[in-house]
Each structure stands twice: as C-alpha cells, then as structure tokens.
Length: 551
Figure 1 (cartoon, rainbow, N blue to C red):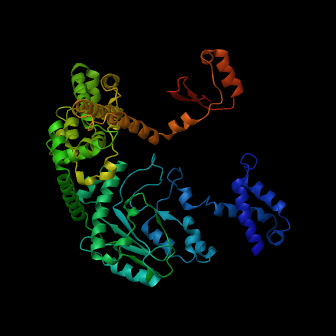
Figure 2 (cartoon, one colour):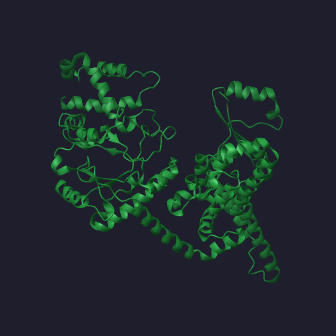
Figure 3 (cartoon, rainbow, N blue to C red):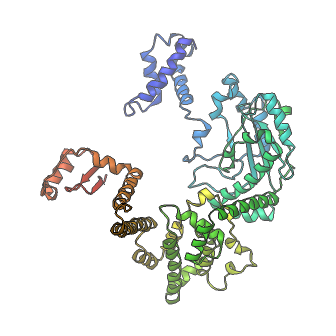
C-alpha cells in the first residue's frame, strides 16, 4: 500500500477502539463505513482490491488487536482445545520451508517480533489440551524446558547452545533450538517416566502439588547448569519453572546449526530431586536456627515435637489472618467431633468409609493440610480412616498419601494454603457444619485482632500503674494511638471504606423517612430506577452499607 494509505490503517484501528459498541457490532460493516468516509485516500487500494478491500481491513484489525493470535485463542480462560502433536511433526513444522511458520515470517519480512504472538506454541511439561484451569488435566509428561535469554548475536547464541548441549553430570538435554528472537535458545530435558520416584511424585494430579514437584526437579537441574556454565547462569529465565509455561515454535532455517535433537537421551530424575531436597533441608535448618527462640515457644505452647512443623506454624502465625492456637484447636476438635459422631450414627460411619478410604481424597487433603499444620495433620487425618483400611498400612502402596516432605513445598506459596478444602469436605455432614458454626464462629482474623487489642490494653494498664509511680515515664496516650493505627490500617487495606465516608450524599433522609415505604419506593423505583449500586450511611455516621439491586 502507498505510505499515506498505510497511515489510514492506524486511524482505522484507533477509530475501531473508540467506536460505539452498540451501534458498531459488525466489524465488516465498520470497515465498509470507514472506506466510504475515506474514498479519496483509499483510491489506489480500492482500484486494486475492489470489494475485497473491506475484508483486507477486517483482517488488519484482527492482526492489530491479535484476535486470532495463538496466545489469545488458547488463553488461560479460553475454552478452545489444542491439538496433540508428536515431536516428529513438531520438528517438521519448525523446519519446513513451505510450512505455516515460514509463511508467517515471510509475511513479516523475516521479523519474528511482529508475528511472535501468532506463532504456534506447545505446552511441553503437561499432557493437556487447554489452559482453562477449571478443565485442565495436570498430567506430567516428564519433560522440562529451560529458556536462555539475551545471550547475544546469532553466532554467540549458537556457540553457547553447543556448549550447554553437552549437559552436566545429571542434566542431559535431548532437544535444543535457537529461540524465535534469535538471541537465545531453548533447552529441553526429559526424564524416565517409568522411574519409581517419578511415578510416586506425580501420581497426584493436583495442580499445586504437581507444580511444586516440577519446580523441585527444575531448580535442582538449574543449579547444576548454573554451576557448570556460570557465564550465562543469569540468562536462564526462571519463569520456565512453571509447567504451564508455553514454548513458542520458531522457524529453523538451518537445521544443522540452529537445532539439536536426540530422543534417546534422558536426564537423571532421582539424584537431582534428592540433591535439591537436601539443599532445601539445609536452608530450612538455618532458618530454624535464626528463629530458634520463637520456634521453641511454638513447640512448648502447642505440644509440637517437630522443629520443622513449629517453624512453619510460626511463619504462618506472622500473618494477620492466621492464629496457630485457634486454627489447631478448631482442626483437632472438629476431627474428634466427627470420630465421636461416627460411633453413634451409622450414616456418618458409612460416609467416612466412602470418603476417607479414597486415595484421591486423602492425597488431596494431606497435601493441603500438611502444608498448613505439618505432621500433626497426617496423624489427625488417620483418625478418620476406618480401621483395617490399606490406607493405614505403611507397607501398602496407597500409604503414599501420608508421605509428605517439607522440601516439596514452595515456602512462599505454602503460606497461602488454608484448611478451607477440608472444611468444605466435612461440611457435607450437616451436623459437623453446625458444630463448627456453634463453637468456632470467629475467624483467625478475629482472634488476631482480639489478641492485638488485648496486647494494647495490657500495655495501657502497665502505663496506668507506671503513672502512679512516675508520671514522666508513663505514656497514657499509647493505647489510643495504637488503636487508631490499627483502624487506619484497616482503612488502607479496604480503601472503599474511606471513599464512602468522604463521599457527599445525593439524598439526606430525616429520622422517619428511611422507614417510610413510600419515600424509599420513590427513591429506588423512580428517582434512581436506572442505578444498580447504592451506598447508605447511618444517621450517626458510624456505619455504612452497600446495596446491589437484584436484576
């Protein structure tokens, strides 16, 4: 297209973004109107393309807004299903000079950055046909991807790819190719999926558990690669420790230099995992030493024998939304209640038999609850398993549900785990739900707030006593200041409260008007009939409510 007409495309995209969505729902009609409004500017293109010009403009909008790009078409919340592809076809797709990838690059004048989001991609580590987490299956393929970014020019990149291809003692790549950007390379490793340790580690298809165990092997292998090739250690993109990560497929123009493949090569699984676990154990030991006094206190107060469990609970207790004593007491008493109930009610006994003899249920619950409470959770869950079940037999394969290890958890994400899934499960029994509601109406957050306010008050009483002896050293304002800071902190975390407090009201009702049906009906059904959200503030100004009209 002539330069002046190319500039019209930018205007087309800009106008489309600003369009009235109700009046301009049809893209083709929008393009036709745009041509009619710019007939003189489109003179040459119209002469060449005729009626096809509007289709060309529609395609341009699709490219500009990436409507049909691979990333968008198979996004994390998209229900499109991907196709399964063998490695041989994948390699053919990347190396075929007449294939789709080559045509895409040719259309962009060889600039891969222009069409990057339209390139096909694969999910190497998971056997899944969607990225929708609600439908996604978390089956591991035994493959891992390492992405080396910003190595340098093409020659430098290829030189380093050849060096890393030789691998390390335990990490043996089986495929590698230069990235679509041209200044980095992808390295692929596969492990033997018939390895007993791999089978045990990935038997569960729970998302969080799989991701943590994938990361364990990945981090162990990454450390080996970084040690062997320190010059490019910082060029490894650690985002590839996520098994859901996508790998874009480039066009490989020179298979002899830009691509390497040997499907018979396998990396070590067990040794890498064990070394990474040992590394994590040493890190944990040091962290426990750093907080030794606090850890001992948690052990004494809660009767916990394990330093590791006490340390993790101590870390959790730092959160304003988690209180050790409250959550442990709630969890243990709920299980004791269920056990006692099963002795009196045959229906509860049968429910336990159906539910807690399931390996899938136990595996899921033990993963989450061990992450929250440590080994205490495993011992408590055993109380719910009927006597004689093979899930209690340490020599049986199904006992794997109980074999939990701190090294398989990501410490940062572990602190986000809650026992919510356990309560959702046991609340299938109405009597258990009633018991918890009656005896543990408060939340950990409430308990933490109570303890905090009580601490402030104890400090205030101390200052009152001190004031009688030495008024200069006493700080009587400390209590109110702390309470004020506490409330201000809540406002910061919930800024909507502050916004609502400072908003000038549209209507002020008298003492009796807000109870008058006719007055309220006039406001909701007539004056503000087109509104959905209402904010109401009490007469004294101390409370506020937000209402949503039921559609």
